[in-house]
Amino acid sequence: MQAADVRRVGEIQAAQAEARGRQTQAGALAALGVSGVETTTGSAAAAMESIAFEAATDAARARAAAARHAWGFEFEARQRETAAERTRRLGILGEKVALVGGAAQIAGQAAAAYGRGG
Image (cartoon, rainbow, N blue to C red; front, side):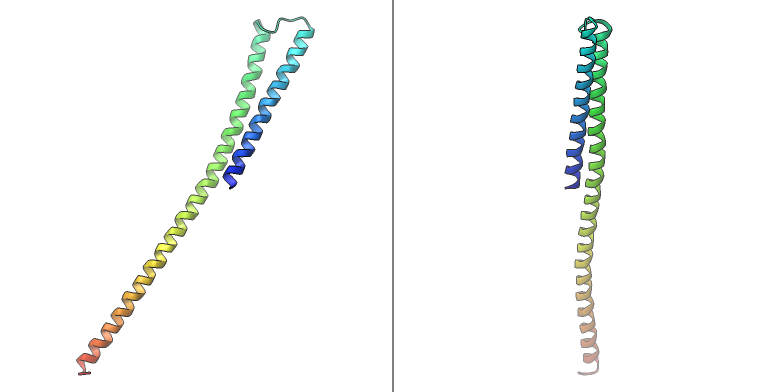
């Protein structure tokens, strides 16, 4: 559950980064357009590409950070499951050892009684 929540938060943060990039691009395009600068070629176009690249990079970072954090929760959960299974198996083994020990004790008592002529 925690891992899924972390992934959802990462997606929200990525979407926010992408939206900020689009807003920055829109503001820059508006400013350039008002100035009469051609926005589809040259340095203006390169600036738009740079803004888009930064937004995509920020979004990717948000997703990657969320994935790492989620992996940590998933790893912890697997460790707890493994420990629980190990504990369960040790419990079963302990029961078997107790049964064998009890049977050995009864056999020992029977042998002792038989040896005494019992």
